[in-house]
Image 1 (cartoon, helix red, strand yellow):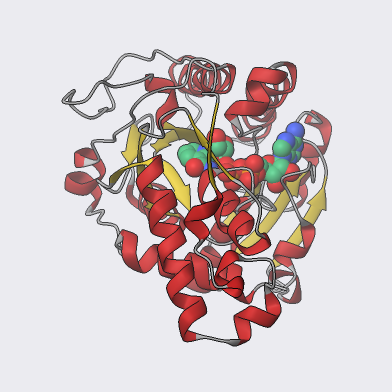
Image 2 (cartoon, rainbow, N blue to C red):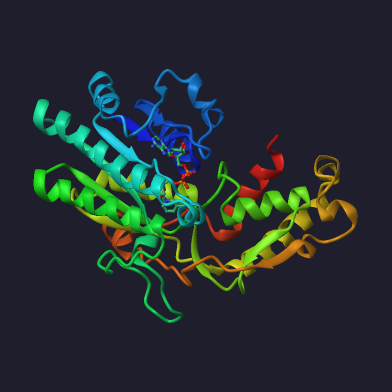
Length: 344
Ligand code: NAD
């Protein structure tokens, strides 16, 4: 049985991780620590809050004494660190919070973990750090996908802040012997994602009849993974991964942004043709008015320093830990759209 501290558990991936873990390991105890920024919603965890194995703490990862007391009082043996400022556009407009939460916040957690797990009461433990493929920079068409040994070349303040936190986590292992693992994952999609990222933004804008902003030519390529396939990878790393190692997690599923926008338009339009009740629920959607969502597509000025392509080589986690994503893009996107269509 494990006692986990999940930081950022009220955000998109953290929420899905909490449900994944409670469902798969019902004996384990989970404490979520979340500052409830614009991206975190306590209501996401309403169903988890009914379980005695679950506790929600409203607090900040920058509060070292709070983190120390949580580790001690809840007998925490595993930290899964999702908490972050996570949106590239926001990092371009205001990088400070990204340095504060992603770099200083991660360092605060590391200091607390070291103090309790190594200095005060030595014990087996795990600090798992959730990171991103964006630390590796941008690929050209035809370049091989990122591996765990690809040099870091972060291009946005977000990516640089995540790269900084990855280095600190590694250093706490190399210097002090903290039992860490790191995962670098590609773009996630699924339920509970805040509608500022591509898939939830396009979906909610279609349903509300708002323009669908596409950066530049829309030909930026991302490697998309259903959120619970990310959580499956984290699970395998927590249960069988080697301390001190980094694992890439990805779905081998590269798509241009513009193709995804067209695909979501088409999937939603078909759903409206099948289910007439959606017309009452979403009267502003073009599909409710005899038009097609594609009419909402609007090209806007490209993001500064926009990375052209990301692609993950997930061979290491596949061959060492038997990882294989369970959802195809088709099944994952269908589940995701269903969640948005059924949401109040
Ligand atoms: P998110 O923005 O949806 O959620 C972040 C959560 O962290 C929110 O609940 C927020 O309230 C909380 N938080 C922020 N600052 C905090 C602080 N100082 N103290 C405590 N809680 C704080 O992010 P997400 O998309 O769920 O991403 C989670 C992690 O996964 C991040 O570390 C991100 O870098 C990484 N990641 C995300 C993706 C993706 O596609 N979304 C891909 C790869 C890696």
